[in-house]
Length: 251
Image (tube, rainbow, N blue to C red; front, side):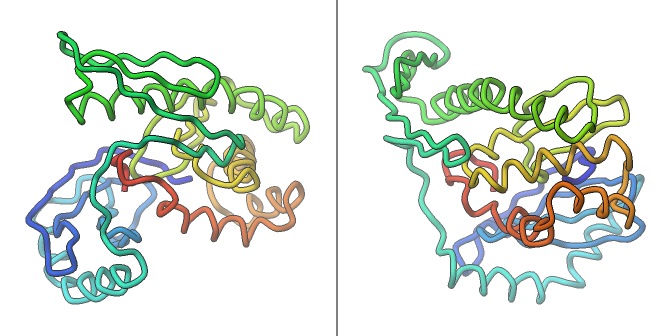
């Protein structure tokens, strides 16, 4: 939902809340000033205008360190830090399906492969390597998202007469989707973990950018023509990062 640009991750040690105390920096061509967002599981993102010097960002974060710590502490009460654990099952609410994840005995190789049968996902290869297992599961999520979201987006485009040229699936850390000036709609495969109505709203939101590449009053009026409840859905979408499992490594 935002125009994502270059991102630099800066991670430090865990703080007293159990969250990592680093932050990520994202340049945004539309940003006119620096801003900070704290996510439910403690991740901190600093949005900056293009060509902002690193020392300016560091000073801005230091100036707001007390606020960041307070926000993290508040989130820690509602969302205690969760340990990493590979999943035995995955619920994809957006498409109403549940998958069992099966890990085969580790074998030689440098990667982990996945294959699907009915609602089972089998991982084979270096299954003793958590990082490689996560990479394989992310590839599987991306494949499911392409298969499931492509026809939904096309049907919604036709119904609302909001065109686009192509759809791509990504695993962005900072946005659910985007619509480029060339007509490409990018959808985050993590949308699979959200409720169907929220997933549909994200697609509608990005489609409406075909006519307004901004968030002006005219843009929201267009969105409202197709989804009168867009305000509630937009708030729900912004607060949905906590629905993404820890093992995905997004938030």
